[in-house]
Image 1 (cartoon, rainbow, N blue to C red):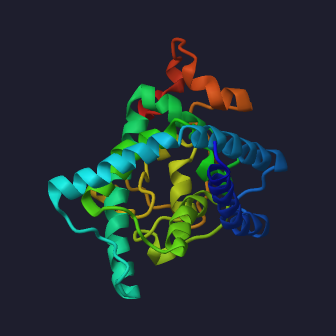
Image 2 (image 1 turned 135 degrees about the vertical axis):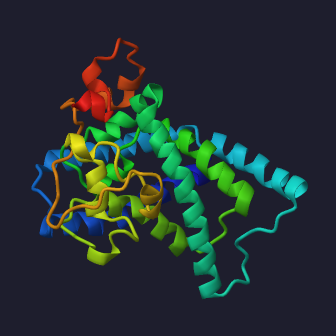
Length: 277
């Protein structure tokens, strides 16, 4: 382990902290619902400890990326989507195309996590948050990273090449996770069908049975519209969050290791509407 490795991962954590703090301040000023401080602390502790585990095996992603890019160049001979000579508008337009493709891939990955029991075991922690806040964007199991990298990041690399964009663009992309999960009483009105936001994504985390398996899209709700999972929130609708079954994950140990408890699952653990009803 080198100092540059430690520095790069500490820098990522500091960048994430800088991005999430404004959302946490807005949550205190305009909360969708009031939560005890311990819920925020739980998510923060879990996010940091999970990131440490991710950092420990992050070399896997470096190796995969190092293999994919030369293969793309040699086999497909495709030009990269992002180059240093792009104007601001060209960069913005191409990045929107990139986001649309990534969001399409992530949409179907997300649906698979709700459909397949083995994947749901990894995803359940994220949905068990009954006091959701912006840090819930990082309240995901540490195996979640590789299950994103393979079906989403690698296909995007093959299609577009490396994501060679300014740091501010990367940070804005990182901020979308905090934005979607923020506990803010904010309604986007006519923009609701166009871009995801705190109210739209809150429906996805709702504990109400009729909201189960709705609003999977992370950026563009059009994918929910196209594939039958769209649920437009009603004016003033900010439902309580958590699992429809009522199950909770309340310890750090359970958050990290519950997916590996190979016991017979109770029917109430299922995320499906049928089981919830």
